[in-house]
Length: 524
Image 1 (cartoon, rainbow, N blue to C red):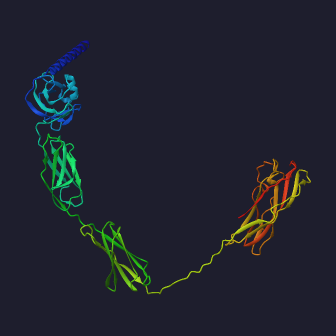
Image 2: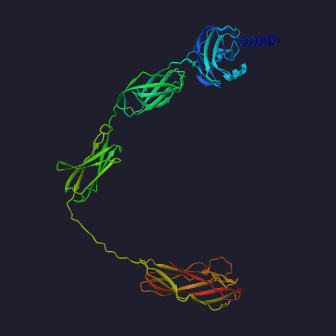
Image 3: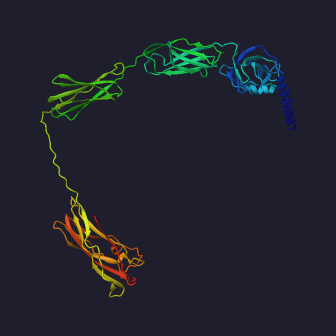
């Protein structure tokens, strides 16, 4: 077991040393071989700080296991600078063409700093070298270049040589299309890195405004192609002088006239059938769809003979005709929609609506006779609003100071229309001597009575309310007349007089003085 561990450690040490030697050889440089393909550089235009990746036009030879990428050009050392170190081919994903996608590990600005210069200018050549891990001999190279047109911007084509472009045009859906339906024009510009715009054309007329090329394509959707045959083209205008413009081959595209939209018409007649002769009859026609432009022709058929009643323009899907000249008898009304543009909308007829015009029943006039019943009023009054009770005396039990008297008659007059009836109620505040002494209002009670009334009236006195037995000042109870109590109820119009006998029970602790309260009478 010890021997195996020692052997494995030795093997790992040898591998580490061998790898270090191989990397050193790669940095020192490797002989270039004849190119076996090209490099597609992404992005095709960029900045000195842009990330750049390469896509080779094919795969390395079968005996190659590794790749190394160099850059040559102004500022870099003779023999170039490694921008991607010696690394296994399996490190990089395959492109759709079978080639490799290899990203640079840094930016051109970083590589310039590494090489010790600051100005990027002119052409820089990149070489992807196919090789083995430990042999620097190239087994095949892929090459490409970029040109710095300023210290901070580059392009992947030689600015001194204009690159030809080609533009193709596809139109969907495949013709023929119907007028008013959307048609999509897609232009494809090659090479895909060519920046610029595409102006789509119908013959010599522009379709919309120029569309920016994105990823080699530009698209326009239009619904403005009229019926007929169109010669559609796409004209590419480059954004810089590095590319030549190009125009697609014309695509012949047929657009057919749109089928006319079907309409339907409904008819309503008012008032109901049977209206007398010379009365107004209204015919209302409704056209669907509501946007259909045109007019409605109203007709009346009597005894097999059809007579036009009039033609009315359609607005918001309807038209109305009113006539008072229909003869008495049976009628059959119809509304016919006549489109303003038969190519857009079809004509349509409503169902016939049978209608009877009755015999003339003469004309009438009228006079209006009016009288006003006044609302009347409910009035309450008291001829003598002052009530003076005798001074209280000690009762037989010696626990209360008592006194009694009568309420001044209350006059209530009701002259209101509708005989709504009435109720009179009363409520008192606490008695006060005008200073700090009081007698609780609960200690006042009454026994209501009817003094007199009008013959047409019914008046009922309220229930007797006993006085509290000496409720103390500050007691918050609701006994006696401290709460609203009914004095009388009445119905019928006229004048009634009502009153009440009063009784007061004051506590024996009441301080001497003249005490006054206010009785509020309310009639509703």
